[in-house]
Length: 104
Image 1: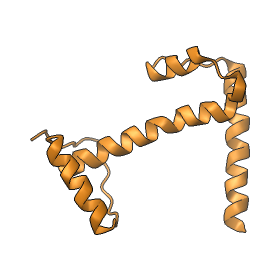
Image 2: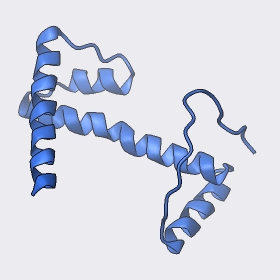
Image 3: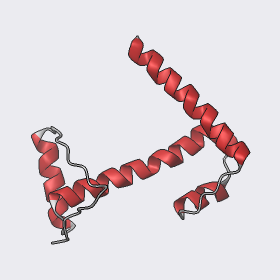
């Protein structure tokens, strides 16, 4: 069994999931020889790693360079100041839309 993740970045929180979901995660953990916690962490990490790539698609649209996506996937994403400004504008607009939706 892999070591338990502990460290300054470790945060514990409770989450409720339907029984069939818990059973599937437990089954996957056994198949992957991981603890239930490690399996959940792995799946969340994989899920969220696609979030930045999805944001890249929204920010750059048809201008998205395959080399930019490749750099992100290899952990070597370096943005110019103009690109950072473009991201900031996109994220500010997105936050405004979410806030408006939540307010109602």
